[in-house]
Amino acid sequence: MRKNDRHCVNLNESASIEQCTNTSADTAITPTGERIVRIPVELGAYNVTTNLVANISFPDPVLEIKDIKKRVIITQCRLLTRTSGGDDDQFSTGPFPLFLKGYVRKNIQYATPSRNADGECISSEIKSLTVKVPFECMTTVDLESPAQLPLRNRRDEYDFFRAQDLGTGYPEKDQYLSSDLSQFHQESFQGYNQLPFCELVSSQILEWDEATDRQFIGDGPVDEGYFQHMVEKMQVRFTIKVLQNQQVRVDAL
Image (cartoon, rainbow, N blue to C red; front, side):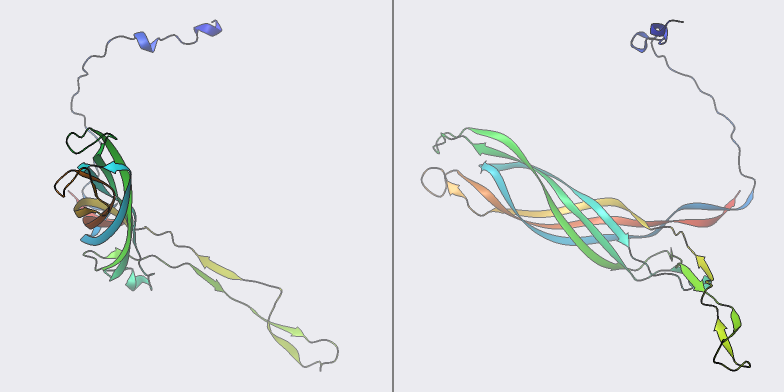
């Protein structure tokens, strides 16, 4: 076989793809009885509200805002739980602090006037500006379903008693009664816990945008104008779910 014949199939000139057929197939089923599965368990769903104020500067004069497309982005959602105190304290419903961080991504489409605008006839171009308005907050939540608390790592040191001779200068009957400093004994435990996580369900944004440096084109307050700076006030509401992978006992029938 020659080296240049290694590629036997030319994918660019392969046969046409036709519809495949299928039939139902039998798969292995777990026998009846109780089984333990690990699944995401919903700890709670919450409507979170935060208020934002942002100063936005445009690179070009803005004749008018044509459209604003926006969405909420969550970059951090961390449920801060305490450690478990023992076998009888492995689950808890809180209250726990929930730390949230993210931003509102906005794509602002606007019309910018041409240089020869005189108020009677204004030619403009459509441009867009994408900005990110960040937010960060903390809220306290009570869980609807108990969270499995993390197990704390432990390191336990222990010693053995040892009697040693004191040596020269001490009575023969006296001894050094303690542990041996030349020995070290320890038992350690590490717990590998399941970290709660979040899902973003929905979001709602109520905004109010106002220009702060509008200048008129032509004479009179009713004529056209432009601006380059805008103050934006937003109320952001979003719904999140807090989940955790837990072992759940189910009845497999």
